[in-house]
Length: 224
Image (cartoon, rainbow, N blue to C red; front, side, top):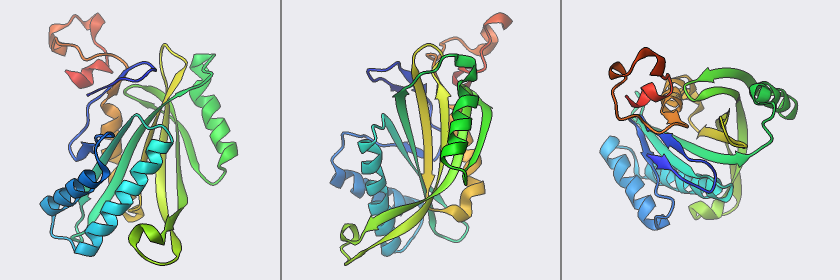
């Protein structure tokens, strides 16, 4: 999958379990499709189907308002017979990156000050070194969305990975959000696989073994 915007392109290969969302699709059709996906996964209650579907669409609309250029939904059956749901969103943000080699550390320091209760680190991923922050958020939920009086709130966990683009003044922000905090440890390798499918280079047509060693590239290796 190639994502093109006014900013530089990047390439994304989604792992199993992630379904890219057509951002131009009619919301009603999109919600019906989510219900069909839930039916195919496991026999969950109508109430949980409704909750997951509405929560997914509400979260998507929030991501679109923030300028998401890609959104994927991930539905995973649990051992308890329920469905764990997560959302992967990608944003391209113009930022001051110079000096480039220090951006991840500088971003991590800023995140630590902004969110002192969050977990912040600088880690290496396939597309490059990145600042990483994980934190819990309380998100208000309008009862009108569910056809109920009043309003409430839900707690979600959000993992954000900020990857500087190698040759333009942009940062690729990869954001994973889930309400299923009890399954957080199970989500981490899933999200790691998604990060491994991101590249700022177009995929090579030649298999890696057919290239001379000096042309081996750990980023492009993910695309064969």
